[in-house]
Image 1 (tube, rainbow, N blue to C red):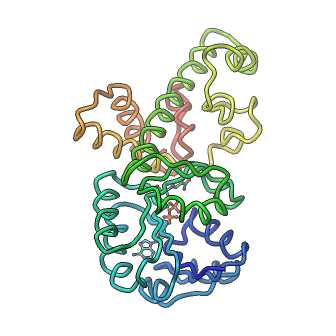
Image 2: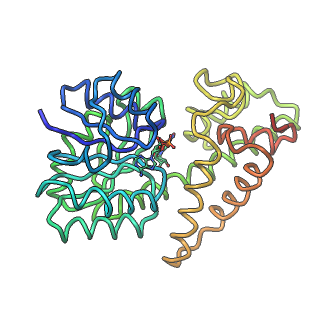
Image 3: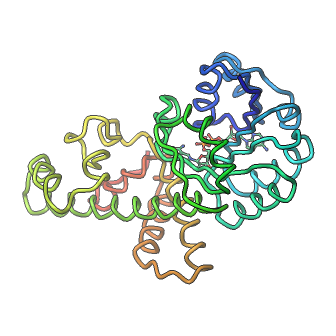
Length: 297
Ligand code: NAD
């Protein structure tokens, strides 16, 4: 069994860390929050005093941090100087492609196998070990990482070179933001036209309007039992997170020269929803804004 350092024990990292410990690995866990470390200890990991302490002697290192600046600071300040030669590094955070590439290149220059491996599947997937990993990095780093990532996920897919895991993640989430808004608009229009929402779901979910946003995460209460719509739009996947991913996608579109008018609209609408008090609501709650019944709590 391997010694694994796990840094970043928030909503996602706590479940992922617990699954590595449950699989029998010797997991050294660190977070800036002492409570988060205590929860990791209760789930079978050993608490570490710092990221540097967690990394020392580890065979593999997993990071699950908020954004690019945290990832860069943790790798440059604590991981690279303290990791043992050849330690495998897996950053599972959702961050900008440019930072992912530059941290990946810095790792390669120091002889560390490194992958950017952002996830899809949310907190429920992190706890159940059913995440989808989109992995960027050299083939040899990917094959080493697969063993560990498959403990935390049901699908581990190699996207290509360094940074392509993050590219896949932001392209996927831009598409998700767009389809969610489109699905919400269709339900709001159906309601105005006097069409029963369950009947519209029964039809559209078997017609060409079908998408994951409709059949797995339906934004109106009723048709899909597991949808946040049935729990007052408690996340799930918070609007603030969707907005973060759309901003990453729009930054990447600007720097790469891609034309993404629908992505830009989705970003603008999620920024509006965020400003109107939807920040901590599930991103499917934008239905209420489009339908005209949104009131911030
Ligand atoms: P979170 O804010 O709950 O957790 C982040 C953790 O990192 C916090 O516990 C924080 O204390 C810790 N942290 C910050 N700086 C640190 C440092 N220097 N050293 C050690 N710990 C540090 O966020 P989350 O929801 O767990 O998301 C983590 C990442 O996963 C984000 O990039 C997010 O975009 C991505 N993501 C989240 C979801 C989701 O549904 N929550 C889904 C897919 C991907």
